[in-house]
Amino acid sequence: MSAPSTAPLLEVRDLSIHFGERRVVDRVSFSIAAGEKLALVGESGSGKSVTALSVLRLLENARLEGSIRFDGREVTTLSQSELQGLRGNDIAMVFQEPMTALNPVMSIGAQIIEALQLHRPLSRAQATEQAIAVLRDVGLPDPQRRLDSYPHQLSGGQRQRAMIAMALACEPKLLIADEPTTALDVSIRRQILDLLDRLRAERNLAVLIITHDLNLVRRFADKVAVMEHGVLVEQGPVADVMQRPQHPYTRKLIDSRPQREVGEPGDGIVLEASNVRVDYPVSRPGIRGWFGKDLFTAVQSASFRLAPGETLGVIGESGSGKTTLALALLGLLPSSGDIRVHGQSWGRLSREQRRQLRRRVQVVFQDPLSSLSPRMTVEQIVGEGLEVHEPALSKLERRERILQALHDVGLSENGQIEPLLARYPHAFSGGQRQRIAIARVLILRPDILVLDEPTSALDVTIQQQVLHLLAELQRKYRLSYVLVTHDIEVVRAMAHRVLVMKQGEVLEAGSVGEVLGTPRADYTRELLASIAD
Image (cartoon, rainbow, N blue to C red):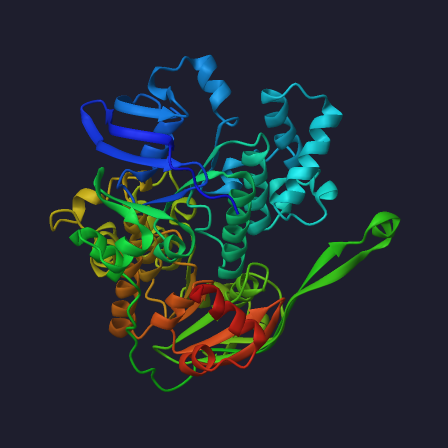
């Protein structure tokens, strides 16, 4: 393994970033040596991403003060042609969400080949050969076939590997990774970190990783720098900062782990699934595809009962079938077996009866920014369900219900809710948007909420706030939750019982204490080991 060099490869000194009159980063200084891994951590809005983007001068309409030196060159004074040679060649970046960062109309291979030919005098055949090699380096199975795949044809982990392959194609000296594992399940997260660690060691690659995941920092980084409101409040070796934090904000981040807040479930059954099975038609390969389709079983033999005020955690890797099961529970996917909501089976209801039952079982999606319409105000978003399910309400009654829903989720500004009603989703933080998404379903007074990764994209302190809010709402309204997640710590904090799924099968089920305390399945033990590393 290559030892980190002592001389800085990247040296940032007294960096300040201004947008107009507003200073968003204030005199930040840090350095990274070749082969070294620095984690830049902080809450959303702390300035960590704009600091990283400034290293590549990717911020539009921003005024930079201070110094950014890379490999002896002052980045702030480079011309556009010099920056083009630096970007992707000497410094590469892996963006937070590969599905939006990758071009959806170009194959993975075409995107890597384009990056190679931009910086290297290679023929198409040579660039193709190198693209296959770099896909193999990042552990993507069958790289020659994946060369022709489009982003939507890959899983989350595979897309992240493709992004890393594109970034590493030109063998950069510094890799900037912005939240590279946020939306990945624990085992894929470990694979990505192991991959980065291996590539760092083989190539003496320096890594600047931007994250709010403190477990990732402990597992991966050599040094950590903590940012709050644009100021670097503390930095040093990971062991020193994590074990002996000096700044109150650092201590706050370290202490912001999900806290268990669960009450006793009530009597009765609000949701029951018996031997649920979901099959998808898939095309047969080759000429056989002309004569019919095969069936892919996404979920099989899933059974459980959910009581009032109870939370069922459904955990598993990407592709385990947990989201498919959730969609079947919502009546949005055809399934065999039986799913009953308050004793009524989706398969035996008329269209009108299904519409009436839908208000009793609602869903909060993973990413509120994509699930909330950008063209609708908060008042329109939260009140939309009332127009469908309670059209007889007057305008005043609808406004009162909207205000009550926003009050229930704790969304206000200086104690006032009305000023928020005319705003659009982009004007809110990630935590505030998640509160709006919860208010949108809460206004219909449902009994059951399906929570699809409700905190995966949130930083640790906002995650704790949202989990506390969900616990309060459950106590107040006796809500039952089906919590679909890959975050075992969130399950440990919220759930009464757990289903563990892999490749569509329920491997084990039981109370949180039984399943997470003394797991029977090897796969469950692997998941638990992934967060302990």
